Image (cartoon, rainbow, N blue to C red; front, side, top):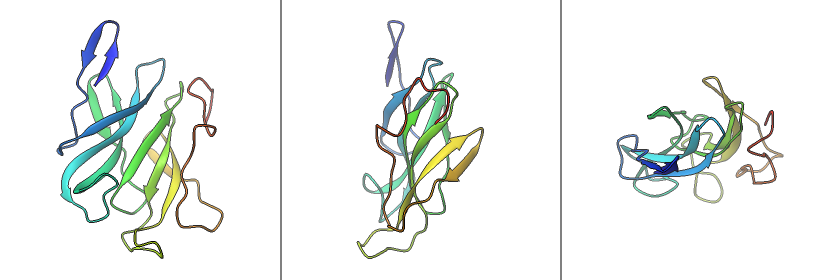
Length: 135
């Protein structure tokens, strides 16, 4: 849920049992993660696929993935660009889970930011500012 102008809004889910809002911008766009009903042995939060979402005007949009089953939205700026991370395949790597890379999502397109040769990479709070003009 989010609280805006004295009102509570239920974000709902993508068909699963859980969603969490992690960031909101000045246009009341929200990102975070939500579960769907698809079983997933590598789920970020357990049980079913976890997907990054963009919530705006009462609607939750699944942002997709970079090729694996899960994604996780972490930041949204005032231009509506989102940053997060996603599995890039379903094949487990050396640590027993699929590799994941950071992404930037803008206008319906998720772009893999890449990494420096590792298997697990995600953006941090210093990567983006919610009020920045671009991610």
